[in-house]
Length: 628
Image (cartoon, rainbow, N blue to C red; front, side, top):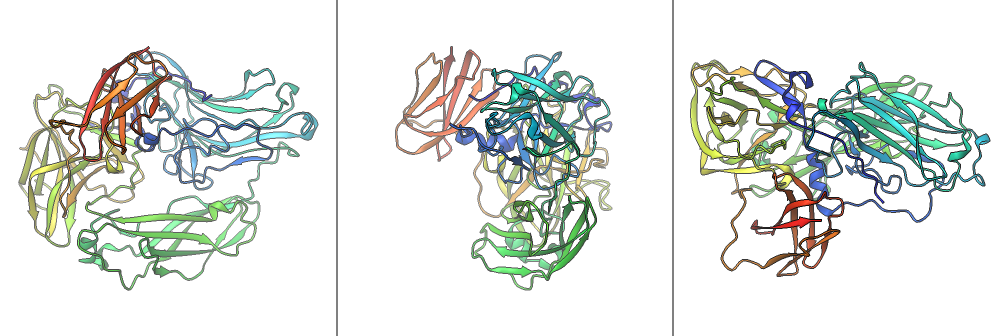
């Protein structure tokens, strides 16, 4: 059975200035929802359950590309496997424990005064029965951990704990770490000997737990290089591995994505001069690592660029940047508006003593699609503007973009960070400008488009963005334009959270003002990229909920009231996406199924809920039910 722990958690206090970097008007807070997990939870993710205990050695360095822990090694999926929440990670991939459950949602939104158990990471049962392993075999569990990283720092009551399961089925705390100065600590190695006979059984398990103070909106802990084996000693801390630690940089020198036809209009100006990442040597001796890189067209497999050998000298326990010049002489042709994907592969060839081989290769993707973006796709924090106290003046965010050829602006996609309570009643406008007062030498604004009476959307769409079409498409000339949102005065729309990619390197191109249109714009003081993107070229479809049409498909759920499972019945043999909301509008489950299949709702607390289905044509229907 999946182990779940609950913590009293509130997100309204994220606006406290002590919870993240702030300026007088700009503010930053932790992401209230993990959209990567929300999107991937659509398949009702469940880890595989083992019928027999796995054998020693146990090892995981979280180098996979799934956001969930490897189900062959772990029985729960509350940790988030990623390569963006750590700083100075020993190799690619860490497991992050935070205050968000396996669906990327808060554990509890009712209290702001308590602290307790949040994320856990529990191993599969491991056979260390006395017939195969004894206390005399020098059995050790080791792991590396980091507090905060790019997330949020632990507070005085927060701690990372480690529990061992004994032969009586009880979990015993064997280690914990709590330090009010833990923010941004480097990764630390921990060695735990296992000598007590109460742990030597055929189904031993260990569990990491994040214990977090809800008042401070949670804490983040990163784990890496988890290893359990015998014949070790307390000085056996060497990892003896060489591997990539960072993702390859994008092939573009400023944007992270743009339409392919816009790219072809100025390849020399848009393509990066170099591509780079980093490699770490976790051995006690220096190594010369031979690295290669290759750029290929994902659709055809054709190689666009292949680098010469790059010999990188690595000292003991050292990390070094690996940079290759990028020279692509020709690009494939595709019809106008086609989404194009290039793959960047970085790998070792013939290197000695590189240890774990899976992290000797890393693959990045360069996407050319119908939007302009500056972010890497992940939001580590949320960005918002603090309106003047009485909200008598509007607040506005604008992001600068450029076009290499004339194009048609169809709309804006926005990555709204879920708030508790949801901000779906906070009104905003979409504004488009070709010049801003005080920016690039201009003395006044030139607004060319405004769309009013819009509200945040939170149901997942492609890449988690909510799409807002313009009422009429806007033709823009080549050159600079600005697109963003305005929070109107006296609208109750203060503190509207938008995803922020804190790993953005370079200018963030973001401008803001909170004192009305008579004032000049301020450049953002935050590092990172605010996650909004203009949609260009081809026609787009709104993410707005479609009203059911007359004669719509029959939809029913049963039983009602329900206790363990909720069956979805509708006409047709296609699959639909469903979301279950609390009566306050918070999504608590998300999945996909076909007619006649059931969703497991046993973990939901008793109460009233709303089940919503969405078909492929975008239409949605809802039905209320009671969970016993």
